Length: 422
Image 1 (cartoon, rainbow, N blue to C red):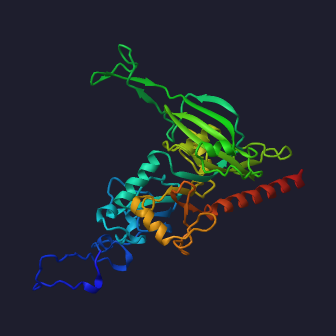
Image 2 (cartoon, rainbow, N blue to C red):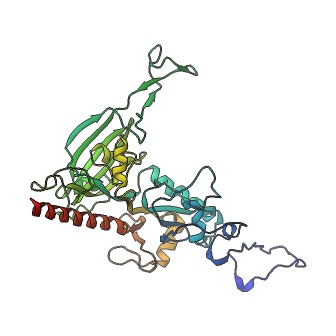
C-alpha cells in the first residue's frame, strides 16, 4: 500500500532515487471492469443480473432462467451469458486487504465457481480473486457448500420407501443412455470392437433409486442444511426428510427432499388428487437439498419417482406428447436454486481473520452487523467453530406461486362447473 500524502504523480522527467517505490495505476471507470466494457464494438448484456452479495473476494448473483453460464464455443462474443455480464455488474477488488498482493490478486475476469443448467434460475457463486476461486471450487469438490432448491413437480409425489430399479434413462430423443465398462474380461466385447487394445463392453444402464425417511437430526448429522431443533409439521414426512440415495449411470447421487404442499391442476398428470374429484391432476411443491452434484441430478431423481419437474422436456418422458404436455404450462423449468451457504474465501485465512475481528461486531446470533449492506440480502456470520460463512436465502421467482395459484383456481372452477352440470 502507498501513503497518498507522500506520493507524487510520475512524469517523463521524474528521477527515480534509491529507496523510492514505484506504483502503476490501472484506470477502472464507473466501478466496473473497464478492460472489458471499453472494448470496441462491445454492447451491454441483454438481461438483468441482480447481485445478492458482493465483497472484494466473492459475489453471489441471481441467474435468470434461459441464460447460459458460459459458452465454450465463443466466450467473448456471446452477450447472453453470465460470464460476459459479470464485469458489468460487479466491482473490481480493491486489493487493499493485505500487504501480499499475490494473496488477493484479481482474476482476469470474475469467474463462476460452479454451473447451473440453462433453464434453471437461482443463486450462482462467483470468485473475484485467484485464491477465492480456488477456495470456493474446492468447497464444491468436497461437497461442503450447502444448497437448497425449490421445484414444482408434475404429479402427486408419494415416495415409496424402499429400493427400486429402472433399466434405462431416456433422453428427449428417446435414446438409451449407456456407459462403458473398460474392465470387462471377455475375449471379445458385445459390439465386436476393440479400441486401442482395451476391451469394451456396452452395459445397459441400470439406475437404482432408494428412498428412506430420516429425521431432522439425522439430516443435520449427514451435512444437510437442516435445523435439528425445529420441526416442520406442514411438510411431509412429518418432522423429517425423504432421503434419495440413487445410482445414476454408475455413480451415487444423494438428495434430501420434503413435500411442502399439493395443488390441484387441470394440466398436470391425471392422478386422483381428491377421492371425490376424479381426473383432477396435481402439482407438488418440494424443497430439495442435494449433497452430490451429478449431471442433471435433481431433474433425473424426480423423474425416476414418476413426477418430473414442470417444464422439463428432457426427462419428462421419451415420447413427444409428454414434451408438449410440459410446455403447455408456459413458464419454463420450475426449478430454482434459492439458498446457498458457503465458507468465505478470505475471512477464513490467517490474514483474513485479523481483518474480520477488527472490522466486525457480532450480535448474539453470531451475525455480522458492521459488514452488512442494505442493498444486498447476503449475510455474513460466524459458525460455532469460528468459520466465517456467507448465506444468501431468497424466495423463488413470482412465477412459482403464480403458477400454483392459477392452476388451483382453474381446477376449482372446472370442478364446480362439472358438479353443476352433473
